[in-house]
Structure formats: C-alpha cells, structure tokens
Amino acid sequence: MPQLDIDIIKEVFHASNFNFDPLAIQVFRYQYAHNSLYREYCDLLKKGPGNVHTILDIPYLPIVFFKTHTLISGAHPVQLIFESSGTTGMISSKHYLTNEEIYKESFLKTFSRFFGDPAQYCILGLLPNYLEKGNSSLVYMVQELTRLSKHPNSGFYLHEWEALAKTLIENEKNKIKTILFGVTYALLDFADKFPMPLQYCQVIETGGMKGRKKEITRSEVHTILKEKFHLKEIASEYGMTELLSQAYARKDGQFSCPPWMQVLIRAEDDPYAVSTVPGTSGVINIIDLANIYSCAFIATDDVGHITNTNHFEITGRLDVTDLRGCSLLTA
Image (cartoon, rainbow, N blue to C red; front, side):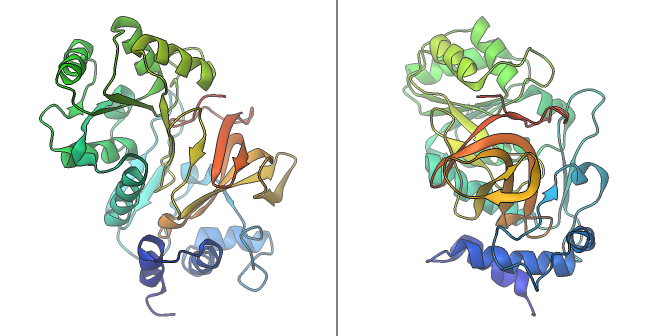
C-alpha cells in the first residue's frame, strides 16, 4: 500500500467524519509490517492482520519495551529523542521521533481543543526536574506553547519561585489569562511558600512526586492547591514519554482524550482481556494513532477505570513497577 502512513496521518488529524476503529486497524497493519519488534511480539501471541479485526484483538506492547529497545515503525531517520525524567537510578524510557511535526500537530490540536488558542494566554512552566534532565517531551510541548502565546512573561521557572510569584501577581493585577503547567511536587512546594488568590490562572498539574515527596492522592493534591490558590478547580494533564498525545482533565481528575487517542482497560490477571465498557476497572491500555512511526498500542502500568464515554480516571499504579517520570498520583 503506497503512502499508507501519509494517508493515515491525514485521516487522523483532518478527517471530517473520524471513524476510530477502522483507522486503528489500519495503523495496526502498518506497524505490523514496518516495526520488526512489534511484529515479533504479535507473532509470539499468534496475532496478525489475518486475525485482528477489532481494537480488542490488537496486541498491546508492554511499556517497558521503551526502556530496552528502539521502537520505530518505518525507515525514516530519527529527528528527536525524548527521554523520561524518572527518578535517580531508574532506567529511562526513550521515544525516537522520526516526524517532529506530527507531535506538534497532536499537542497543539489537543491543547486548543481543551483550552483554546495559546495566544490568548500567558503560559508558565514549573517543571524543574524535566528541565534538569533534558530531552523531555513535556518541556518541548510547553516550550512551543509559550512561544505561541507571544506574551512577554511566558516561560519556564526552574527554582526562581519569587520571580514566578511576582509574574503571577502581576498577571492577576492586570487580569491576564494565565496557564501554569507544574509537576506536582513543585506546585505543592511553591503553593506552600507563595499562597495567593488566583482568579485568572488555570493550574495544570502534570503528575508525579519524582521521589521528592511522599505520594498522596490526586484529590488530596487538588484540595491543597485549591486552598492555597483560592481556586475552584485544578486541571490535570495525562501524558508520557512513550506517547505523542495527551489527555486532559479540566476538573475532578476526569480525563478526556482527543479523537485519535483512546483508553481501554485490561484485567490485572489476564493481560489479553481488554474492555471499552464504561465502569470497567483494571490496568490502562492506550491507543495513540498519532504515534504511527513508533508504537500506537501500549500497555501501561497505570491502574484506572473508564467512567463514561470518552472519560477515564487514574486510580494508581501496578505494585510491581517502578514509579515513572510522568506517573500520576492515585485518585
């Protein structure tokens, strides 16, 4: 099938009547043909184009493979390598990008879907561990959003908390719409030192204590931040190095995906028992059709449940796995 990948990409982002399941099967066939590691994994499970007919039939690659193998579909040259932040002593996951523009299109369309045009905001990043590690997909995303915001105060803050507080106070005084992306432990530390009422700022926690603090539930984190910042709601971002798409929760940890991303649930005691039925609890599988040049079908280590159509919650992690760089808190 000549240029099948290009046709699929056009369909993913620009189709007027998007039909997820058939497109997911096309992506599966493309990756089975062009990703040798994924094909080997599928063959071990005796799964291939001849007997994969629905998204429930598709083999989901354990996410740990991103720590041990180079996952590339196709023969395109690598343009970027994203690396997970992790914690000290952990092996990092690596995501090899062969098409930088697909990532940009994915996160920009998703951000606009949930929050509107980035140009209407001052966008701030409190992501110290990601900045220190380097090669972060989250930093790349926020950096591009700050560029598109075009606001002079947009940018990153490493440990300059007084400067960040000053920017927030100035933005509040001038009624400037602001978005603050922050890793959980840094947001909690900042809020403790610089509590202030935020009327014009949307706080988006990106999850993870990174070994810096005791893990507490997402609802506890949000309660603290809402109290310190006098906010009614705290937003959340669900993303990871291995994906090219994100889900967002505007409130209450109820995540929603863009049209080309879908969450499924697999049973803890049977990794091949997969469901899309609302109310189902278990371990999270993800289909990310934007990830066509890597692996679009990932079995994560996050535990959660589907709450209703197109919404899900994260409730924890499998006990046998390491804490990940972008892992989210228990709910």
